[in-house]
Image 1 (cartoon, rainbow, N blue to C red):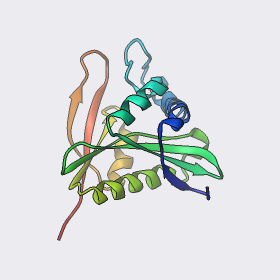
Image 2 (image 1 turned 60 degrees about the vertical axis):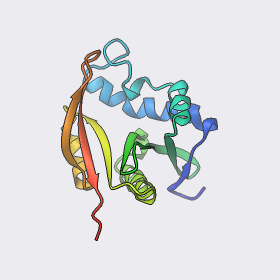
Image 3 (image 1 turned 90 degrees about the horizontal axis):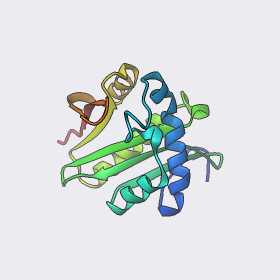
Length: 165
C-alpha cells in the first residue's frame, strides 16, 4: 500500500483493528477514568469478537495504512436509507496530528454519500470537548445526546448533513 491508503477490511483484519482501536482509545479512557468495570463497551476495551459481530451486522471497517503500518481505522454502518453512522474512529498515537483522522472521516462521508445517505451520525463522549470541536471543524453539528445507564458514559450525537441541490 502507498502512504495513507485506505482499504476496506474483512474478518482477517479483526485482530489488527481491535488492537488499533483499543490502543487509540486508551488515553481517553485514562483521562475520564473509564475501565471494563464502569464502561465495558468503551472502545478502549475493544476485542476481536466486537469486530466480528460488527462485520456480521453489515458494519464496514476501513483501515488506513501509512508505509504498510496500520495508522487508523473507522467503521461505517448503513443504519437506514438516509442515515449512516461513523464509529470507532481511531488513529494510533504515533500518527496523530498528521491529518489521518480527517482523512478517515472524509472517506467515511464519501462512502456514506455513495450509499445514498443524506446524513451521517457520529457519537462522541459529551465530556470530550476537544474531540467534539474537531468534528465540528469537519462539518458536524451536535444534535442530541444519550446516556448509558449501565455505565458513566454520556454520548453526544453529532450530525453531518449532505446538502443536495
